[in-house]
Length: 453
Image (cartoon, rainbow, N blue to C red; front, side):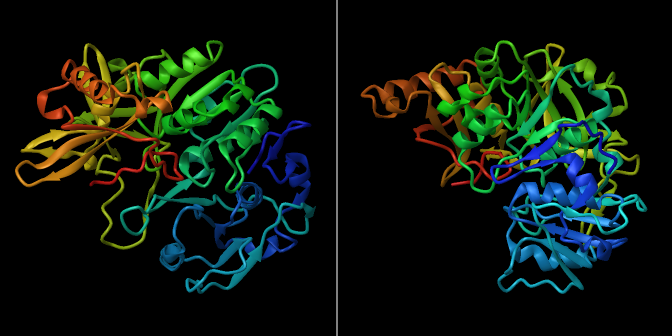
């Protein structure tokens, strides 16, 4: 990878801080990088920083790179190795349990840079393989190149002055990888979270390094805003993606950081980066569909489709996989949108619909209404089985003040939230019950964990 090097740019975790100039002159592969020339390599590390160093070193050297996310079960490792025809694994692990893959090379990686001892000249257009979450079965292997991954970066002008990026994402997922590449290709510094690092400690480190640009999912940002350490960062630019950015979280961030540019972006592992919205409002103007440079979009059956040079090429794996693109090269994102008063609003995922007596309910649409209530911090709408209706809509709600969950007028507040919903939603979308909970589970990807009752 041809990084844009500045004299003091770095990549940092809690354990180490590595200058890019040192890595360009050295190696994180303990002197064994020459064994990986032209090979299909899987990166399996516990820490993000180690993975970042290896990525910088192997692009253009390896024929194929597969990023194995830290939250993905090792039971899928043999399948991924076979599907991607992996020849070498770069790892800081010493054990794999019973899931020992059959590969020729196991190469250790370190955070201590050693003198370079192999040819690092770019000889391959390396394939970058990203894995989907695998929460409902084996992961899909999504094929990108550096060109498709970095296609949106040229459209962003780096502001003058010192820029330091950080992200709540893990760089082995698409959202985090975008931030990693932006830092590497523009010569800016990057602060990464460390394995099992508490949110307060991460925010404190980000503040110490002077982070100016920060990205994450809405759930990431809600969690950060609940931490007292949120006052330790003072970003100039805040970016949200990965989940629907409702008006409540946008308002919270703009109120907390009035000096910052708060934007939300649409992107997915398969479709790539589509567009960003910087007007402080949920949804996006209808004109975005036809007037976004270098991106073609269409809406079919309320689903957003995207075609561009930023989309992935294909899936790797079994023949039973559906094609990634249609015959015209469009990717069906599966994200459902609705046009209201000249603006499109995301209402949820097609595969996440709750069927209530034959009527469809998108959980995210209901959540966006509940989250606007002045006493609600965040909500999760789910289905509960009913012998009569088949399914009921219920909402788990976290209140802004923890002590409110014990208040004597909890029942009155529940009724108040339900009235709030009735003012904005069709009757079949109004929750049958409101449950006050202390917190909601968030996956390693930064998204709310959605499970049916």
